[in-house]
Amino acid sequence: MDATGSMSNLLLKAKTTVRTMFERVKKILVDAKLSEDSFQMQFAVYRNYSNDENTLLQNSIWETKPNNLRAFMEKIGPDGGQGREAIEVGLWHAYNEHQKENISQVILIGDAPANTIDEVTSNRISRGEAYWSKTKFANKIFWEQEANKLKSSNVPVHAFYVADYAKENFTAIATRTQGRCEFLDVNSPAGADLLTNLVSEVVLNNIGQQNGKGDDLVKAYRKTYS
Image (tube, rainbow, N blue to C red):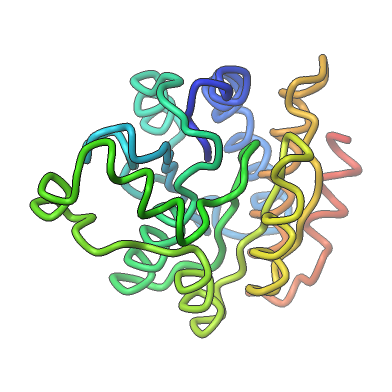
């Protein structure tokens, strides 16, 4: 998810709802006689090249317990921003994680599109290529290439935009990777519930597909919580 200066509402809601997400998903799994540890979740946040190597991308480890993810998110605050954002770095990270151990899906949430090829070059100028050459981001990263890698690995990116500014690019990312794309009104009074339901249903849908349950888990969730 985007963790630049405009995303304070999203970050706050993620911090306050992560426990609820886990509790609800695990209840549906137990009711369906599936292991409540059928899934792991990792949180990762991206910003832009005005940030240094350590804050351009930050991620938790893979977790089965909400308290650990909540502890990670408590350390994350809104920072930086340069118009478009470094979604490409987030997609790059997701593919690298997939190379270590297969991941089933990516959920992308933000309010700005990914940097264009030209913007990747121009935005890196603020710190200079001499700086970036000594980091894990020494090579320039472009969203189309990273999305294609995830597509070739059958990892869908479900892209949820919280502002129309991101709609076109988020639609392109989701379409390219065969994910879904929708508007997430995280800034509304019901934003926390919307975020909880969105993440929970996407997780349950994936688990259901892998365990021969189809969309039964999502239906059970909606019957119980929506």
